[in-house]
Amino acid sequence: MPEFRRTLFLDSRSPRRYNVSVYNGGGAERAWLRRRVNKEDRRGINMDQGKQTKEKAEKLAAMKKLSTSKELFVLMSLCTKMPFVMCDPETFDDEVFLYEKEEDIKREGQRFLDQKIPLQIAKIDNKQFLHFYSNLFTMGVNCLVFNGYMEDEYKLQLADLVNRPGQNLKEGQIWVENPGLHLTALYFMQEVRRQKFEKLPKELQELQEEILADYGKGTYLAPFNEENGVPLLKQQNGDSYQPIFTDMLEFNKFNRENFFKASVMTADKITGALAKGARGVVVNPMGVNLQLPITKRAASGPAKPLDPAKLAEAAVAEALKEPEKPETPLGDIGNSGK
Image: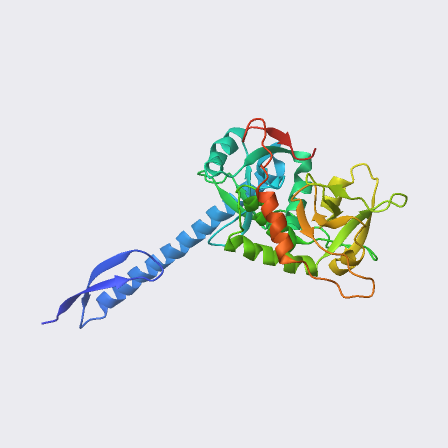
């Protein structure tokens, strides 16, 4: 008499399990099982295709809104005067948060205020979208979180939406950017300025080391005026710093009146050309405002590396300052283009 046995079958491409009876001695039942498996395989493929179609539709919908909306709203850090950046712990994407509606960004942004992260909201008009997205590349940002923490949240790679600037330069043109330094400085200052550190914790010391390494490898824009020379910016404590910029977008924020020209300089050249009376350089003073104490070297001598102790001292001094506060936290709607 033929025997039957109970077999648990698992299709690796489908989460479904089948409890089927298999006839040991005949081929008809095995053929039936093969047909059933093939049918489920095809169903799994169709499900995968359906999922891909849905994901594509969601991506296109997000891209359309990020391109054609009348306006968008972005979370801005009061510590850096720049878009608030956050690193995704799973993908390690460096993200900024954009919302379609003002009421949504106020509601969802409250979670950051609850963590004592000082933020405000900026409104971006449609005509400013391209400028805003291009600026994110120079900040080192690679991902847009659209309607974050909401049911229709979508994370879009920045390069899928706009082309990176500086790719099609004419002969003789130079594109200056330092996204690694800029991004690390943003993360560093977002933490340093929101907490009163008597001594920098290990995590911030590691970011500080990254800043030192990135600065030494960079090329920057240094402003000068043919009649008045190099500008110096005096800080509240009386120290003066020479401004330098990671990219042209940051330089243009400083040079709204077209009073200055920009000189392209590497970090070691800046050390040699430091203005008299300058304690060091301040990177992007209209944004992250990162102060780097450096010492001018003799013209014939080697460039002196940045002193980590002095940088730590400057960072702690920054930590003891109160970050700027809007009149209405997370409700001060400004225009990012102004």
